[in-house]
Image (cartoon, rainbow, N blue to C red; front, side, top):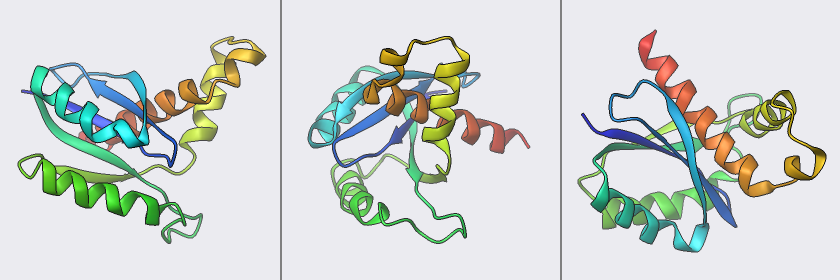
Length: 138
């Protein structure tokens, strides 16, 4: 059984999270510049067994697609073209940045650490992946 990898896609940088090989828990892995994401994915997948990529799906409160969706679609087309064997699934990412900030606050991180946008993106990716895992257990 391979890992699941989640991406919190942003125009500048993307948070990355992965599961352990048994898919029991998800952890933040890193943050990658959006322009380097495809190279990172190919390199990571060549070293680790990844069974699926989960990409955050930004939605409005009413469930309609967010404006950010238009930035993610070109990446998804490129991913499907360059890694056609890799299954890709979209998963709702509403409130993940807010939850990431809350987790940082609850974890006792100082004000300066909470301003680290890369850390917020990485935690948001972990939240997306944990929510995805939870939805599959139900």
